[in-house]
Length: 516
Figure 1 (tube, rainbow, N blue to C red):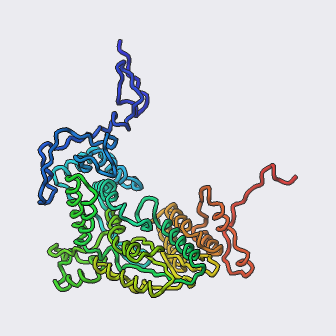
Figure 2 (figure 1 turned 120 degrees about the vertical axis):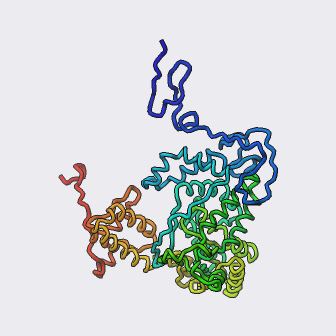
Figure 3 (figure 1 turned 180 degrees about the horizontal axis):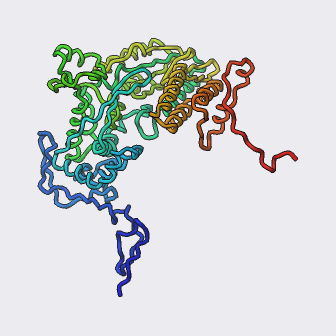
């Protein structure tokens, strides 16, 4: 009598040995539920209709190509397999969808996408092979950030999957080696903390080289950076790097097609404006909130402004870090500035000569003008290192002894206090829950407490306790911060300038330490 198949777990049911018993393979492996998407490329030598009318080179295929990531000869970052098309590899599409679901699984749209991920993967692959893929414009909604209103675009899960596939497998590898090391935005292992460390390191290095704080720093900022990027010039820059790095002809053609489709979603309807006004917007500044609150009947789609990049998508992040690459090269190579770095649209240069920085700024203006960017003259300045200056919401000054003083900007604290009071009103109205308030405050305080004074930390903690009647709970590793939030400084208590402290949680002494 044949033995009964013994299912070992909920996932170990997919492979059965010759004796009828289930082995240890689970559903997560390719031998299980998830199929092995081995791609058989077309034998006709034709490229998809997505080539957008370009001349299609004839490609001979004598054998099938395994498109799995672990296939022999597959170079994930180099694209050295001649007949490899990453957009036809369902394994890569599936992995891109898995990345797209991170940090958003609480949303209903993400949960629905996860239920049908395999089917959606097949549909995306089919659309790429037929040339029928078209991205959705997404949901654009305004937000208020530091007193400035701007649009944020939320893409569908399908478009997020395609963006991850395009950026992770093609665009990011194509542009990464052309970025300077001190480009600190929207890259792996880089960010605001990395840029601040490099900024402080450059100031310390300058002091070690010159032995004093007698020097100058040039702080530059672009006006409406994302809103004023012209599409034609940006597409030209992206095509340049794609043609240099992507060797597979089909991958290159689909990448160029996808780039133009993405920029198509960035276009703004300007049908209600005259041709002279549109020309002025293309040559000058563009308001990113151009269509905010406009009557939908006026948005007929007859005239579209091909300028500006939406904020919120992964391709926008790649565009933000690579588009002004000539400015970086001008500073590093042409002018030989050692202490230079850029964080998206904020960049700086340090020198011992003010005249030199003035000439560098003129070069920055010329390079920016060629790419349609506008330097914000109100925020662009040359200041002494010994004076107090602000960079990325932090106030710095370099002392005669080489010590770098860091302070939080007062407006940042004022903004957070107003935010907490607004959270209190929303919490009382039942529009938000307390964990949202707690996580927001913990995130803000965890990012700024190292540059805040003892009194500032204590006063913010006191305000939080007065509003919500409790203190935020911290995990291990925040003992010092927990103590600062609960104890006033000696100077403040002697002058009586500090608000009342939140009560400490009582601690009963252990039997070993209790008095006899």
